Every structure is written in C-alpha cells, then in structure tokens.
Image 1: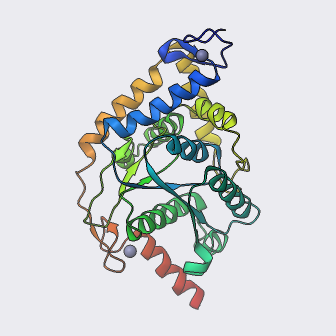
Image 2: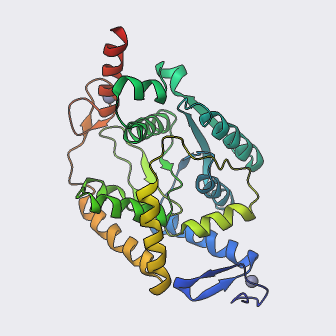
Image 3: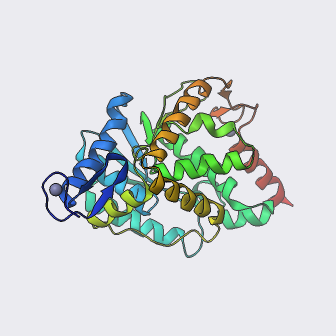
Length: 297
Ligand SMILES: [Zn+2]
Ligand SMILES: [Zn+2]
C-alpha cells in the first residue's frame, strides 16, 4: 500500500476518504481534522484540556500544540489505588514533553474523599458518579481560572459507542452533549466544551499517539465497565469496513439532532455552589451532602 499523496510506503488507510497515508501525510490529515473542529465552529480563546494520561487526550494535546491554540492541561486525581497515580505520572510526563502547563486537582485534598470511599458509602456503581465528579470539577476549574473552553479527548468511536449504548437503553438525554462543540453559558457558569478528536476514529488516535511517542499510561480503570462499549465499537468498526464513511455520517446526523436539543433544557445556578443544574441543587452538591451525612454516622 502506497501513500496517496507522495507514494511512500503507507502506514494507514483512511477509508472514508479512499486514501492511504505515510507517516508525514497521516499527521497532516490528523491535524487537518482537528483544525476543522476549531475553524468550523469558531472555537476561540483559552483552552483547558482534560488530560487523563491515556492515548486519546495525549494525542489531542499533542495535536493542539501544533495549532494556533492557547492550551493548558488539567489532571483530576480521583484517588483510585493502583490507577490514579500511574495516570498522574503519565500526564505529568506528557505535559513536560510537550511543554504545556499542567494543573493537578486532587479529590481527596479538596473534598476529603476518593472514588473508592464514595463507592463504599453510596453502594452504587462508580462510573456515573465518577463522570458526575469529573465533569463538575473540570468545568469549575476551567471557569474559575478564566478558560473559555474545556477540551476532552473523546474520539469518533467513543462518541458513537456512547450514543448507541444510550439508544440501546432508551436513554436520550445526553444527545445534546454529543456534538463537537457546546457554547459557554453564563447561567450555571458553564464554560464551552470542545472535542477536537470528534472526526477521528480510535485507530487513527492510537496510530497518531504512537507516532508522537508520548509516554501514555495504558492501564484501564479497575472500575471501568467496558464490555458493552467494546461490543458497540466492534460492531461500528465492522460496519465501517463494509460501508466506508458510515461512522462520519452517523456523527453528522447525531450532531444535527443535538443542535436542536442543545438549548431545550432550562439551566440555572445550584443553590449551594452556583454551578449548572436542572434541579435546585446540582448532582455534585447532592452527592457531597450525602457523603457528609453518611460519614457523620
Ligand atoms: Zn506521503
Ligand atoms: Zn452545586
């Protein structure tokens, strides 16, 4: 297989374009897809990237350093033994290598709790709690430090697996969150959200992060419930082999649906902390209130 641009040996096939690329031209394609999100949606200002230590957010940060973007990184330490520490070390190494400022926010230091102790207190599955906490802390940090947008490393495969998982559970609310960009909203102190890898697949992100030689952490969260997500991804990728480009067309359709849903919901400030909620008190404050009650006895 030869590169469609320069006829050097190709390292990857990009089927929706009907092209194959060598290392140099693949990097050019990848950066072009990232740039497209910023240009098409006019994303401007200071960007705070949520760096997890994994391949996607690492690839995302590396790509942003090549664009004309003012970016800093944020790592959230949730106190998961044998996982959070490895991830933090990877995040520090990645930020150092890319010469990007990294901020570390520690759940234990700031709120006196960790995911394992929350799991014990709440007796619930950790993933949704963990999502609530991360989303809340990332937005709060970005808002308080004058960032305009929070960037995350969600790629095309993640997005679609997430949507189809929700569809499989007749759960439609998060549709408004699946587009590549959500505008900042002053009510509820919400910074904007941007997913620079929105048009890129799992495979493309993996290859890009390998080429960039980033010191990523390959450990998986011990709590992660990945079985159905992986099944969805396998199904989506096999579909894409038979119907090149179908993943991008799904994403385009979902994006249009989400545009119609973005502003539907009334958002106001939480009575306790002032950050966004659709109820009187936000999920994060409700969780922390329960934790305080339970730990008092
Ligand atoms: Zn080439
Ligand atoms: Zn609150």
